[in-house]
Image (cartoon, rainbow, N blue to C red; front, top):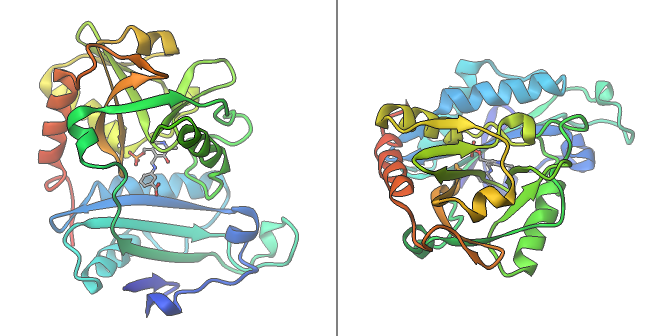
Amino acid sequence: MIVYLDGKFVDANEAKVSVFDHGLLYGDGVFEGIRLYEGNVFRLVEHIERLEYSAKAILLDLPLSRQELIDVTCETCRRNNLRDGYIRLVVTRGVGDLGLAPWLCAKPSLFVIASQIQMYPKEHYEKGLAIVTVPTRRINPAALPPTVKSLNYLNNILGKIEAKQAGALEGIMLNDQGFIAECTADNLFVVHKGTIYTPAAAQGALKGITRDTMFDIARDLGIPMREQNLTRYDVWCADECFLTGSGAEVIPVVKLDGRVVGDGQPGPVTQRLLADFRQRVTREGVRI
Ligand code: PXG
């Protein structure tokens, strides 16, 4: 495997960062998780734009321009002979002293890994996923906006561990007010009487690229879709529920905390969205 690291393409064994990198010491950095489908980097420009916003939010200067980021991402895929895969773009604050001060870090570090990901076993796309509500609350946007895709994923990781302890592959994270924010690595949607609802980013959700794609698909299919505050009640009483993410794509949810959602089967709206999504992934993006 070949990894891009700070201006060079190196063997994966040589792709190493310092123990003094603040990305490691403090989780000081940002990243993107991107999918490659049949030689097409899905919505690459949108991912890079989100990376730019994440970096701006934490006052981190990206070492490369947008076009350069696109070029190194595609080149990393080509060097690994990948046609389908998962791309991890990471920018850390770089090497610095012990002590938080990011301004003492000389320069940010940037690396791109192009590999594979399998988030959920295939059968769950056909039968649906059983999820739980996890006790850990999603971090308050006033503390660290969840719209920043930062290297601080401990909040989500605690949620992921709790989901696993409860026997589930994914878990809903509520915000401080008890409204649904999102899942540990996926955005959440419900379908009720023909309308699709999802929490606004202000409730503690990442502005998912797949979530944005759902808005476009729903508009094109003429299905109404709105941002709205959601509680667990809205999932209990929903006709359908599904999750989205670059790893998960579009995955139906058929159970929450042991309760059956809808009729317990993946719903027709979810299935239409998934089918449309699968068509778009090879079209919308950047050819490597
Ligand atoms: N919320 C959170 C907290 C996420 O981490 C999403 C929503 C969905 O966003 P996108 O832009 O992907 O539609 C994410 C994405 C991994 C992995 O390595 C995590 C994500 C995506 C891909 C891989 O576990 N999270």
